[in-house]
Structure formats: C-alpha cells, structure tokens
Amino acid sequence: MQRSLIRMFRFLPLGALYACMALVIPFYMLFAKGSKASYRFYRMRMGYGSVSSFFHVYANEFEFGKVVLDRFAAYAGRKFAMDVPRMDLFQELCAGEEGFVQLSSHVGNYEMVGYSLVSPKRINALVYGGETATVMQNRALLFGATNVTMVPVSEDLSHIFALNNALADGEIASVPGDRVFGSLKTVRSRFFGEPAPFPAGPFTLAAQREVPILCVFVMKEGRRKYKVLLERLPEPEGATRQECIQSLADAYAGTLETVVRQYPHQWYNFYDFWK
Amino acid sequence: MDINEIQEKVNAFLVDELEIDESKIEDDARLKEDLGIDSLEVVDVIVLVEQEFGFKMSREDFKELKTYGEFCQFIAGRFA
Image (cartoon, rainbow over all chains, first blue to last red; front, side):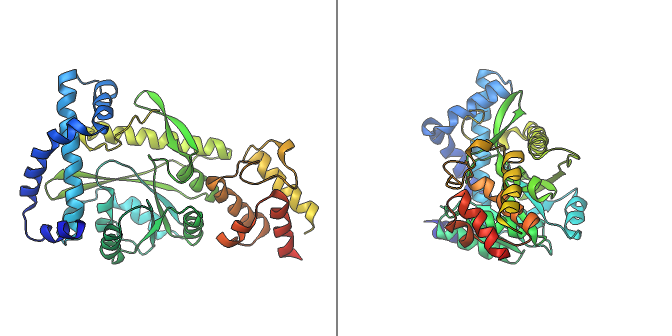
C-alpha cells in the first residue's frame, strides 16, 4: 500500500492529492477520536468560539493530511523549498566539539528537517519502533545522504545507550519533546495556562550530559515551502539536576506554545495533552 | 578502589541525584522494582559510571545487573 502510494507521488500533482484529501477530511472528522480532543484544544486553549473551533478542527486535520502526503512525496523524490532563518544557531552548535540534543515536536513536519539541517555531526533520530518497514527504508534512503541515523525505541533499552554514546561522541541526539514514550516519567510545565506533562527523558539526557538543547520546528508555509524555526534553550547555571530538568522543560513548553499560537493548525497531538 | 568507596559514591548519587530513599538501598534491592531505576534513570547511571569510575557501560553489562549489590560488585570487578 505505502509502496504504491510512493509510486503514485512520482506522477500525480501534489495539488490534486491535497484536493482529494480535502474531500475526505469531513468523513474522517466524524469518526476519528482525535477530532474531539482537537475541538477542545481550539475551544478551551485557543479560546475560539464553538462554530469557529469546528472549522479550525477541519483546517487542523487538513494540514495534518497535507504533511503526511508531503512525507510520501519526499520519499518519491519531490523537492520542497526550506527556509532556515536562524541557521547560525545550528551551525554554531555543529562547529563545537560537544554533542547536543535536537528537540522535535508533533507540530509542522519535523521529518522534513533532514533536507535542510545538514551537518558534519551525525544526527541520531529516535523513532517509534513500530513503523512499517517501507517507511523505515524510505527514511533511511532519504536521510542516509544527510548523515541521519534512525534509532528505534527498543524494550532492551538499546536506544538509551545509543543516544548516550552519540552525545558522548559529540553527535546529535534527536528526540521528541512533547510525547511520552520509552520511559513514562514526566515533568509538568505550564502550557497554555495549565500544567501539562512533558517527557522527562530529553531534558534528563541534556542535564546529565550537560549538553545544549536546540528546538527545531519545521512549519508548512506553502504548497512546497517550509520554514525551519530554531531556538536554543537557555542552560540553567548553578542549578541542581532536578532544577535543571524543570527549567529546560519550562523553557521548551514556553517555546512550543509560542510556535503553536503562531501556527495553530499545525498542532498534531490529537489527545488531551494535559491529562 | 574498594567496595566501600564504590558503595559510598553510588549511594550518594542515588540519594542526592535520583532522590531514592536511603533506607531502600540494600544489597538485594532490585534496581527496577525496588529502587525505581527505569529506562530514564539508566542514562543517569551510565553517566555516573563514566564520570565517577571512568569506564563506559554497555547495554549487555546493564542487562545482566538486577540488584544494587550486583551493580556495585560489577564496578568493583573493573578495579580488581
């Protein structure tokens, strides 16, 4: 199925596929569990009206559909324009000897980062272990040229050792900052006015190894255009381990909120994030 | 480095950094079930070993260790 989809992307115009997606979304909205959570997000967190929130859910699901299609288009060899206004932040960290944590989020289309942030340091990207072989093969093919290695989450904890060794060797560990998986430990930080659980893992890893965190958000700005927003989190000085973890998580939550407010339809955590 | 020095360093780390109740730290305390060292704390533990004892632990090393006593003995073994 996925292979056929990738083959199809070589011939069909992206706009036509988006149009098909636009027609399917209302049916999807009726049955998808995530639509309710999405509606509550626009109504309660973003403060939109009840009717307006409904249309925001549609726009949100449509944007999500588009970024999924874009991923397959990229696997099929389609090119996208990538604008990186603060490339200096990435280059500065890459020029240093120490490794760093590159924090991804379920907003925009993080996977497209492989196009634009090319570095001499290897990027070790933590990925969900249950992805299909087709997706993993295409990712490997696409990102192999850009020095990205996939690290699947594994029950035997090999991913923890892989990421730790990567940072010790001055490489980049790319991990999601807004989704709990692997360890269930969380840090609560204020997000849209209320404390929300964030995974403790990325912040613990950075605090323990004393390496910087660079937040990366790849936001869709046009049919074939993305903007890569970079933000280096301030490193707390003289703080205990716990204070350091909390401070990093708070800074990340603040940055994430700013980005989500700027691109409200590109927030793809379709569940009650605050539970 | 003898076993007492190793235990002293490990205990200080477990109590101060991971906030583990000192009364729970016994030779037969299981790392995961009794001390609550899950996949996340593994990062802390391997960095501790690297920084305090000067060697890298592999995944295979860690897999074999079930209790606090075994963990300290494993470190002592590297200095024997």
